[in-house]
Length: 176
Image (cartoon, rainbow, N blue to C red; front, top):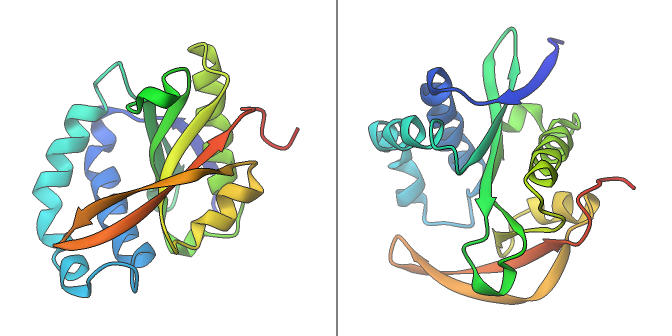
């Protein structure tokens, strides 16, 4: 197995991040989102590539990638200060994706741990994220110390109402 490296994303990573973003959506949301919507994801490569070229150079975001020497970027985590007023003193994890082939190898934990370390350097002591109801990654968030905050919101994706749950980390020292 190749060595896994977690490091800050660069502009040059944008295409690989876009690829992981699209592929992970197709893997992660199967059965949770309309299949026609997921089937169209690869057609949005240009959109995702443009997005990640912008985000990787935006100093307000923290974006880290997980990469192997063999396969390049296999996962990423991204976030910044909270968008939600009630969490204004929290860092927000905007997204975390890892190709399914690499699940169960503690790579997601390493990405989260490194991201939280970066957020602590930016004077955040707590974090939160929104996760789609029924998403199996909820178990991962709970294992890393995330707790359901007791509230949700409804978003419309592909003309379908989707419920997202809020998970909060009151301590950014994972496993402690």
